[in-house]
Length: 374
Image (cartoon, rainbow, N blue to C red; front, side):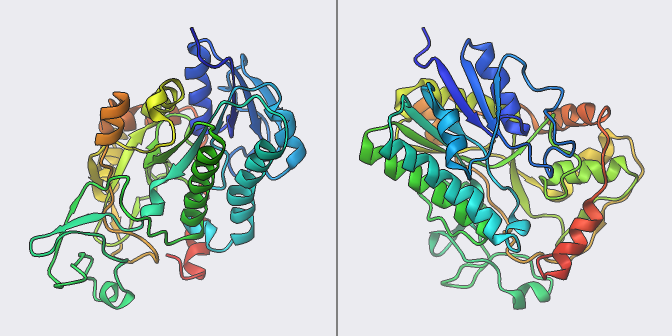
């Protein structure tokens, strides 16, 4: 028997949200979606063809109280995915990011605090970006959380990370949920605020709440037209258009890629299990993959003869390594990522063969470079 009857998914027409709808509806849940069909994500301004028709769609915006009130009517749980996404973009569209991410979440909580509702659980999409640089081990000083590498160091093409105490080179290790959040962008600050607001509110009002810190989510339905999308989709869009993947630094910086189907499974596990209540969980594969390797895999799967464009340029605010320690979510909820990265990229490419890759990447890169963010 389902613990909750109707679930509200904000941002449910998007990449992660649409997969989550399929998973929830497949388990028998009734689902309502609140989404504004933002044109950076949905260029036509219309629902995508893959949107699950069994879901109830409500066009609206999380920055409007009236839209929240309509969407919350009669729902038992909220999975709050709607957000303005993109680290670099957040540094020059500051008002927009704060309004959507921080104020949008504040409106939800204000309604729940002051008006009648039927909500019994809240899950909010948080982000690994709030960690800043990942966790490292120093042979002399033990576990450390170094600051971002200095511009002076990076100007010398020295991309390594050093211990802030003894100055020797350190090695990356998984980052767990107890690590301090050293947010270094407006986007990261907003995601940190979202999770803190939801968890603080939930504990104060006895309303079960959970924050899921997504790492680099990828997979089918990822937009090939959004120039501020994840690196896998950006590389794929370029290769599909006959252009080489552009790689910053030496390409050996690593990220943690988690397939969207695994993210769906994590959300459903959190929804259904009381052990998740009032907790923060990393949602990642726990396996670091270098950016250079991402490009190599995509070029190989496309059977392309393109060469990677390793620029040795640096991007402001970028971290060298950050990947998830997933022990907590494995132990409490029995969840772990199952999709192999190469297989997942193959699925993304298969999806992309039927999608028009609108190449806006060069424009995006020029915009970021103009503002000193690339």
